[in-house]
Length: 59
Image 1 (cartoon, helix red, strand yellow):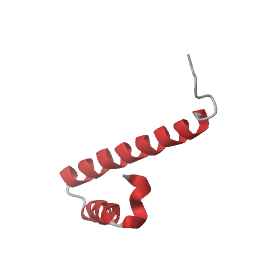
Image 2 (tube, one colour):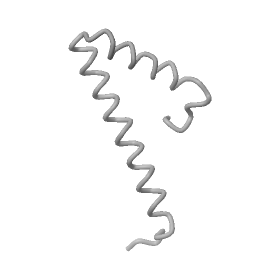
Image 3 (cartoon, helix red, strand yellow):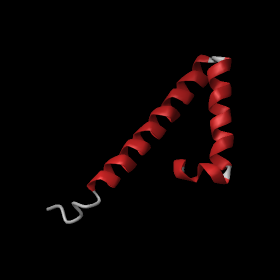
Image 4 (cartoon, one colour):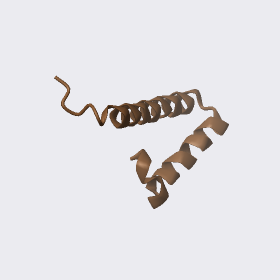
C-alpha cells in the first residue's frame, strides 16, 4: 500500500544517498585498517567536510 507515489522518486534518491554514504564509511574504515595514507587522508577530509554547513545534505 503505497500512499506517497508522488514522493517515490525523492525517496529513491534519498536511499541512494544513504547507500553511497554508508559505502563511503565502510570504504574509509577499510582504508584506515589497511593503513593506506592517501585514502585515509581523503576520508579525514570528508569527515571535516561533513561538519561544515555546506555539507548538510550528507548528514
